[in-house]
Length: 118
Image (cartoon, rainbow, N blue to C red; front, side, top):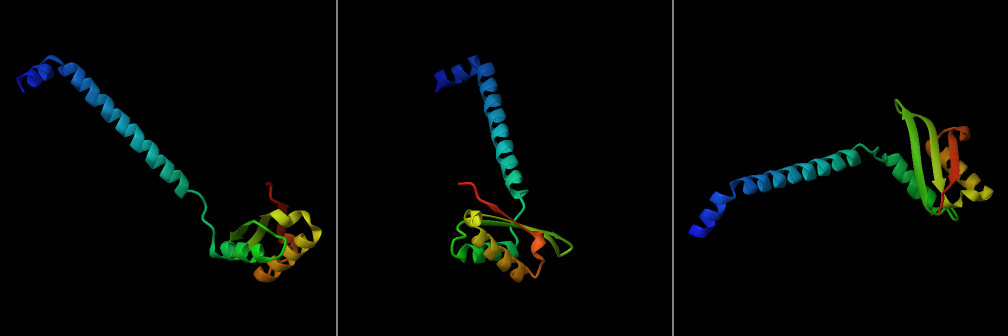
């Protein structure tokens, strides 16, 4: 026990430096973790309409994996972007156009459909 006390007394500067380094590493770690959480919470969340429309479109034969974004201003739909695997087919694209136009009660010229890169 006396050897440990002597060791601490003789190496106070080294121990203080080690404690400071540990504290600085901890601060950097927690700041990075908090920053990552803030970035992920700033991402726009899908609306219920986008989620439901994605589910419906994915059920249409040939559409495949789908992602939907609806642009709204004051509750008024200004545009819809659909990215899906089946968009290379004109028939599938037409089916999507009709489904989205009907589901959202909007003009077809507000709907843009693109092929998903694989």
